[in-house]
Length: 325
Image (cartoon, rainbow, N blue to C red):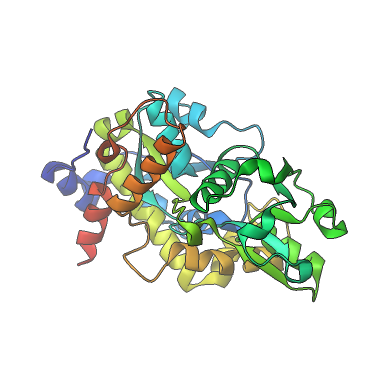
């Protein structure tokens, strides 16, 4: 299914007297707890970007036990932020979700070891203990090992428990982390002891992370709403990158952890993931989607083959950015 934005819809969007006739209430399911990872959304709300588009937005925090896919598939939420891999898996199970933008175009998932541990490459993981979260992080780790022809049975894999104590005490040799989140807290705890990072992206596992997703039905029935929401969201992300202090002001209205310094560092770590130096903010490349789907299919993670071209659309991004040209 390809979503096309008609000239009539664009006309309505561009004429304020028509577009502002009613306020649309929109619910957004975030991928994780409220934190600077989502500063662009908070900034768009605080500075009136959504209001100017005739949208009243509510952000729902994610976290352990929150099923993002079920929420958007049932229609409980209108938009969701989720990993591109989980969205593709959902489509293979018959759930018609479609990506309209990718905000973290570089995946923040990273594996961490102490630099003095003797671990210099993933080949040194053999015989070591690695703590990995269940789900898609485990999948990306397994894919990375397969790309390097390293057998999973040669590694002692244990569940990650959202506690760095085992790693700090030496009971775990390699731990999963999140470059724009938990890695910042881990660095605070390790002090001057240097860390070595291993990015799956460096070993052929290129997965988009925070991706903005809607149900196909909403995109088909309300392309005007999707376009207005995306335009406001992208404006908020651009503003957050340009004015990080203001973005943190907005973030602190929501943040689960009321540590301004930590939230600021999280935003700084997010900037290269969002603004990668190529393309525009939110842009998606078809070849990346094809590669993600191929990797998932090769590892038997897609229950059925999918039409990758139908899993994402550039139409809304093009419509937003053509207005700026």
